[in-house]
Length: 115
Length: 114
Image (cartoon, rainbow over all chains, first blue to last red; front, side, top):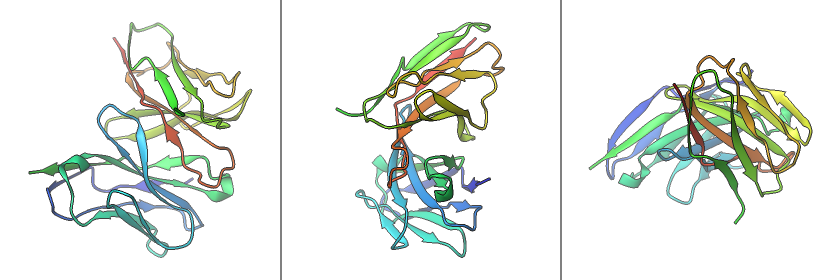
């Protein structure tokens, strides 16, 4: 079974500083990878995804993630965070061989941006 | 507006009572899912359904039941057999076999059982 590891449960960072949220997954076979964001007491929203092609994927609000097959990682980065980026971030993986619909989530990383 | 609705947003029940959480989608998605979210544990899959009148157990199905009589609806019943039902419950949907493979989430229902 797939598993996803988000080693950092909380990441505090000052506004305008860069940030990296780490994600590693267990499978060595082809996978689809996702980052979701959750604001307090709300559902999850898709931030970005990797299905195939370029290993660097970007979101519309300045986040990017790089798929690294050899390290089985999909770390999320932003060069300069804003106070509004404070939220919980979840990495998720699906197995295309299984139809691709079922996702396995990490335990989440709480990003807290401070002034 | 297309999306997923969950009601109510907050739900309070006494121990020993069954309670049903509502999930409706108008995205014409075939697949629907129920997750439970607890602090520090991420999302855990309770049940999922890939087509009407069919559903499968997820990782933590004990103490829960579901039905899928209509494409747009996937209600979850938290039974009295669920030992620790207080949690945030999230419903999601996705197009079955769709190329994007992403799931779309509802706003969640926070259930408190005392």
